[in-house]
Image 1 (cartoon, helix red, strand yellow):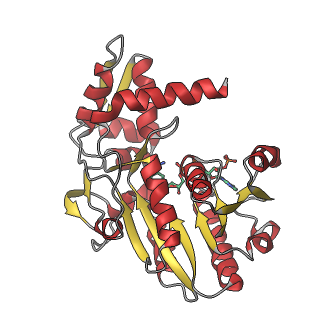
Image 2 (tube, protein in one colour):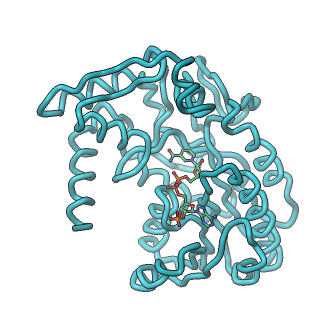
Image 3 (cartoon, helix red, strand yellow):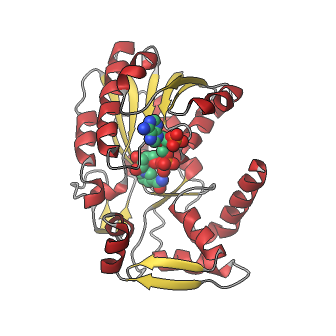
Amino acid sequence: MHVFLTGATGYIGNAVLDALVRAGHEVTALLRDVRRTQAMKARGVKAVVGDLGTTDAWAAGAVGHDAFVHAAFERSARGPEADAAALGALLGAARESGSSLPLIYTSGVWVLGPAPQAVSEEAPVNPVAHVAWRPACEQRMLSAPGIRPLVVRPGVVYGGTRGIVTELIRDSANGLIRVIGDGRNRWPTVYIRDLADLYVRLLERADAAGLYHATDESDEPVNDVVEAVARHMTHKPDVRYMPLEEARTKMGSYADAISLDQVVRSPRARALGWTPALRSVVGNVPRLLEEIRREQLERV
Ligand SMILES: NC(=O)c1ccc[n+]([C@@H]2O[C@H](COP(=O)([O-])OP(=O)(O)OC[C@H]3O[C@@H](n4cnc5c(N)ncnc54)[C@H](OP(=O)(O)O)[C@@H]3O)[C@@H](O)[C@H]2O)c1
C-alpha cells in the first residue's frame, strides 16, 4: 500500500510511519518544515511540504495514494480550524484516489468525558471543553460517503521519548511530579508501538470500518503510576498535588482533561485480533526508562 500520512514527525505519526515501513508499505508524509524532508528521504519516505490549514498547497499531492492517515495536530488556538481544513482535504483526496479507500482520523478518549464505569465505542460522547470541537470531526468522518472511514481514539500514549507519561518520568527524574487533583483518577493508556500496530491493522483489514478505541485496559490510577515511577528513581521525587481549580488557572481546559477518571474498553480493536503487547505502565517502568535513555543516546 502507498499511504499518505500527516503528522509523520509527531509522537503518534512517527510511530505509525515506522510501523508502516516495517510492514512493507510505502509512505508519503506531509511535512510543514522543508528542512525535515532530507531526514524523511533517508528513511525512504517521500515528502509533500505544506501546512495543515493551507490545503491548496498539498491536497493535490495527497491524491493517488491507497490509504490515508491523519495523525497531525497543531497545538494552537487555530488547531481545530486547521484540523477541519485538513480533514476536508484528506476526504477529498481519498475519494479522488479510488473507491472506499481507508482514511484514519486520530481522535482521543477525552471526547468521552468522565467514565468511572467501563465504556466501549457505543458510549455517547460527552467531551471535556479541551476537545469540544472533536466529536463533529468524528461524525464528519463516520458519515463520509465514498471512503472506508476509520476513527481511532487512543488513550494516553506511553513509551519512547514523548507524551504525558514520558513527561511524568522526566519530571520525576528532575525531582518534582505535579499531580492534578487527588491522583485517584485512572488514565486509559496505550503503548505507542501497540497503537501504531493497530493503525497498520486497520488499513490492511478491508473489513475494518468505523470507530475504534485503543487502550490497554489496565485501568491504573495516576497515583499508582506516580509511585511506580518514583520507585525507580535514584532520588525520591517530591509529589505535589495541585487542586483542579488552581490547575485550571495555570493550564486552562487541559487541566480537566488530564484529571479525567476514565475506564475505556477497546472491544472493536480486540475483535480484529489486536492484542497490546504492553498492558501496564506500572509494570513497565524500567523498560520505559530504557527507551528514553536509548532514544536520547541515539540523538547525540
Ligand atoms: N499523545 C497522546 O497521548 C494522544 C492521545 C490521544 C489522542 N492524541 C491525538 O493524536 C494526535 C497527534 O498527537 P501527537 O501526540 O502525536 O502530537 P504531536 O507529537 O504534537 O505531533 C503533531 C504532529 O502534527 C504536525 N503538525 C502540527 N501542526 C502542523 C501544521 N500546521 N501543518 C502540518 N503539520 C503540523 C507536527 O509537525 P512538526 O513536527 O512540524 O511540529 C507533528 O508531526 C492529536 O490530534 C492528539 O490530540 C494524542
